[in-house]
Image 1 (cartoon, rainbow, N blue to C red):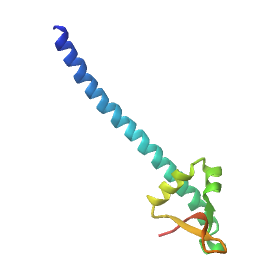
Image 2: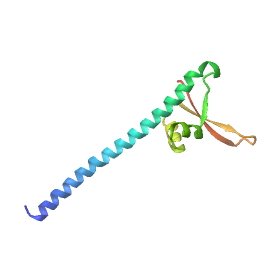
Image 3: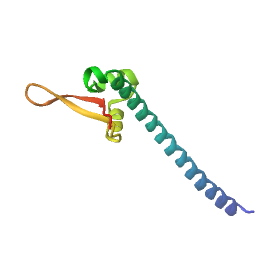
Image 4: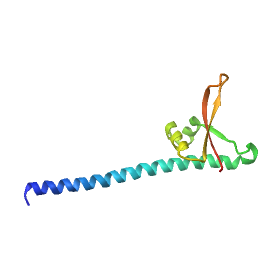
Length: 109
């Protein structure tokens, strides 16, 4: 086996390893996002269930509170809320009808 054949074998092996490495990295990223989304949904559902009778199921949190409690960034919270039908987004308006803050809650549907 001369050096050209060895180089071809190495290039083919590198291509296969790149495919498997990329697939593993994508699965790891998706698992991380899924676990963060589940943690957010579980936290919101826990408060929804505890306060369902007293607040008519309306118990909402700001992204700052969720960041403190769950360790998620604001962008991760927004992304999880857009990809989940049970996480409800609403806004709190100021005196001039501009959005002051976003609120997140659990929606039982």
